[in-house]
Image (cartoon, rainbow, N blue to C red; front, side):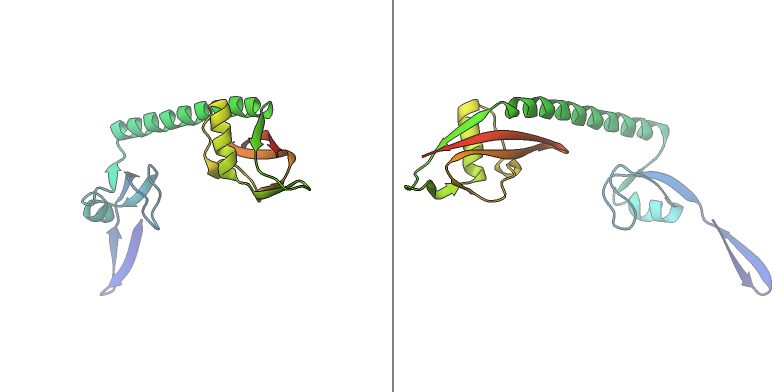
Length: 165
């Protein structure tokens, strides 16, 4: 990048050197972690390197970054496959939850996402985080209800919950 200025009727040219670096942390207005950016030489040498926020984008560091990205992709793919298998298994599961109920099928209290997660772990030995149980509101009636569970990005398993009085 060249910046031209006139000084005493002469053109003075200032050359700004650009350096390619790999960021080690998120920096507001610059980039995210593991991103390759072009930054001015002074900014890199005086700010990013001393604060250990970036490394030079040489062949060795680029190879490390590529290996790291491949590892993350492989891990994410295996988690996605496991989530798909679990979703298929969940679609066949009927979860039974016993609660106290009144005469006309109304439940005292209700069945919450926490109750569903605990019952699922107790009956099928599969641990599910209660935050992943996508229950709009607590179940307050007896009978069979279909409850979606978010397993992974875009993968949702549905379990049938049979609320027994």
